[in-house]
Length: 345
Image 1 (tube, helix red, strand yellow):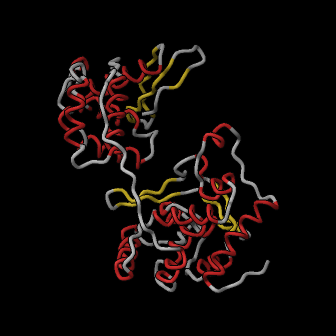
Image 2 (cartoon, rainbow, N blue to C red):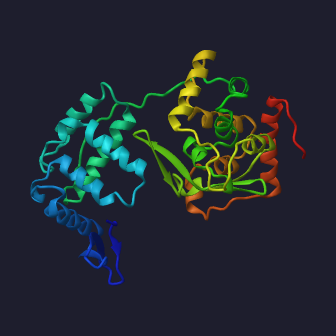
């Protein structure tokens, strides 16, 4: 079912897919209201009254409200977001989940926060609180909670240098995925989503991701954010690694390895070398290298696919100006020096 959309008349409408009739024609139920929130609330009540949840909408528990919200958004949010919501539903702020949504107050929420603070980080608790507030708003319950979240704890990691990482991964089965992440700043989901057809004339289009949810791969034709879809010049060293991967079609994945396999090999190597390093840390290394080389924020954000207020306010476009090419060559030169290889300029 889709989220509410505004109609030409100014009202908001939700269309609920009810299946197909005996002739194969799609059956839909349209629910219209004067506001987006009201339309989605009525749609959720319709879902529940038709068997998705056996409950009186006026007496929902927090758990039922979140479940209804997840069902309402399932087809418009990313699988990873839905997976995260399911995780919150089952594992976060559990002492308030059985409360009636009208009974939830600051005291009950603070108690749940205190319990989770023993084992959960501030970010995890904040996300759970925000999901609860958003879900119950569909029932016109506006919570004005006055609670204290645990303070954010700075994570200070002593990462190995790029040179040390190269020495560790060079010639191994995970050299290509690690180099794509550390050199070109790709997320591991973007690395695994790359197909051979995404590279044309030495330019890679990052436009797909393959994420692992509950040990199952889900391929998304869109990236994490708008800015994540980007083009990158592929350094010759990485191009050589890609060309060495056997394939028969452009639709095949450049890195076909399972996420857990890549992680296992990296964990084994880091333990052997005595380092502390995760797959995501490789992007952190790339960011620190760009900072060290004095790469302007505009190009650093562009290469890494990071969003900022500036990029959100403007039309996003990739630049291949002389200055951008100079930035690419500067970063490529850094890694090529570490590898002891040279590329034609």
